Length: 176
Ligand code: FES
Image (cartoon, rainbow, N blue to C red; front, side, top):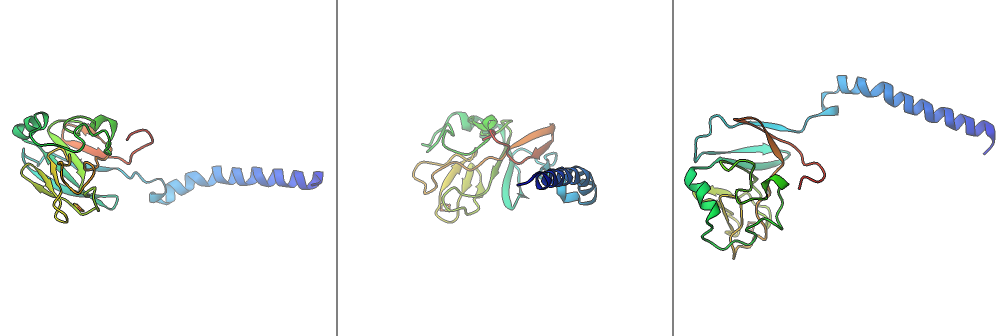
């Protein structure tokens, strides 16, 4: 490569870099999805104790439940054998590695997909049941011993914006 070619390549490199710096702010302004916030806010204000709702986020369903005091108490006195009671092998953010598998004991948020083959589990009085091969989970999404499902239901990353407003956020490295 002669000197002239080298200089041409250097100038081209600077031009491309400069073009990137100039166009980025315009793309952010003109294309809303370019810098999209993939988070989803969930209003909990209408959920009474014992009530739940299903929300759709990033192509999957999630159960959001406001637990009763009885349900909360039942999670610390496990009366049925669980496959992963401490959630050591299951998927959840670090903040949810506890008996409630949640940030707050009264609110549970978990993906609906059974960890066997991915069917949507159905909420029941004391937990969840998978309609495909009958795997049972408790009210913290912990799978019961003997089920076909190998792991607890996955818990997404989220945070509270206020007492009744929760925001789902894509996991960042190191969250899980
Ligand atoms: Fe849920 Fe098989 S998919 S038990």
